[in-house]
Image (cartoon, rainbow, N blue to C red):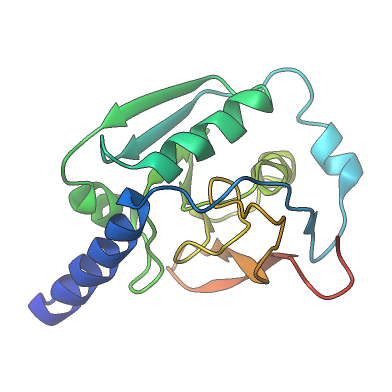
Length: 178
């Protein structure tokens, strides 16, 4: 990665991490709307959910809330608090400009940011040839970034292709959704 790209990645993630350090302005109840429904595929993941390894800053409150989102859905979670997760993001191939405040690994895939658990289950059920999922930034109303009034800022979870490109995987908080 060239020095300018690395600096941009560090600055962008630094801003995301500073937002995490703020006291939560949130308390969730977001209802995601998948781009393409596949409830049968998601059900196939069933009872045997794989372990999720989460890399996060030890001071990030919203990351802890996202971990709880995973645990409540039945995922076994291992948390590794680290002062600098940038080398992990780089090693796992998080695309430039798509970073968030935590990075997870599950069953051969990478999960970047506040991705809803139903999207992770869908990924594991469908098993596409891909690196994983990314939710850039920290959208209000996403898991771990819940708003007291239940408001959900529209956001799109993206699939990271093996070449590092991304495409929409699921949309959440769109007009008409609760």
